[in-house]
Image (cartoon, rainbow, N blue to C red; front, side, top):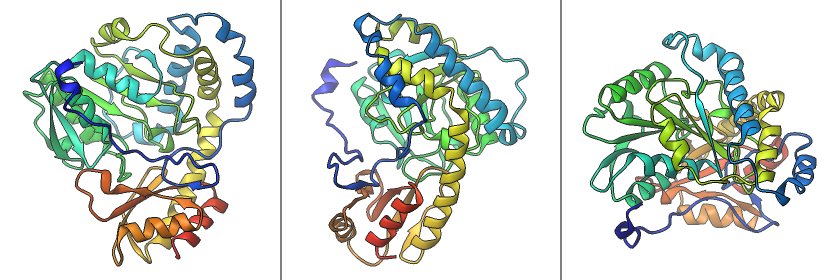
Length: 354
């Protein structure tokens, strides 16, 4: 991290409401967690009396097994249309305390002061902040044009798949072609797959030259747990392993992560539910908003006929929090809403008067 850059960078706005009496649609997390998760967390108390194994072998095995399942089962249809890479090595798994910690670790290993990085917009606001904290310069590119960009002369390129806050997944063939161009240009490609679990797309973790960041926050509904991982077959893996903080994942987080990563039936059920409810919400909300196409557990809504503040305040009066999306670069009249269970989604529709 560049010490001089710290004084020039500010915090960014995120979703998430701390009021327990409010139904929170501003954060895109699963409203349910796999069965048995609480018991695993409570049972891990005794583990917390000792330092965890800094190599986290059980967690790393669970993450690698999960990626194998995702590629062969959930992503089978998408993978069938992808470039065949033959027998690629298994990715190196680097446990992290959430996806964002993993993103910072990648940037610390890749960027130096004076470098530049391709950053999608509108997209997750932390990307630009983290680039600047390394003393590097974010080069903003429309999120749907990043894959057409020449990565040469940039140290890093970032793709958010599916993109937050718009919700679209990247075209797989174009993404792989872009990854190949990044490799040829000696540019590291970081793919943030925080919401990929909600889709039927396989990870890019086994693709040469790519580092992916994954989070257990979203799909398993555990934002306060702070668990995730990086995965890569790139030569950068050794640097990531060396640079990662020792004991960077708590013993309870590792134990819960191991459990959740094995709950593949839960993931499939979640994908099915989100697909049904996202379509139902989008159809209803289209009567009052311009709804962006989405493959994610959220919808971006352009407000057409009244001030954004009025929409947000009226939802709040009904006990519902929605995300003010004007904090995303380039969005001036948008809100974002999560996709939850049917009964909660009905409350959202009522709060938005649709």
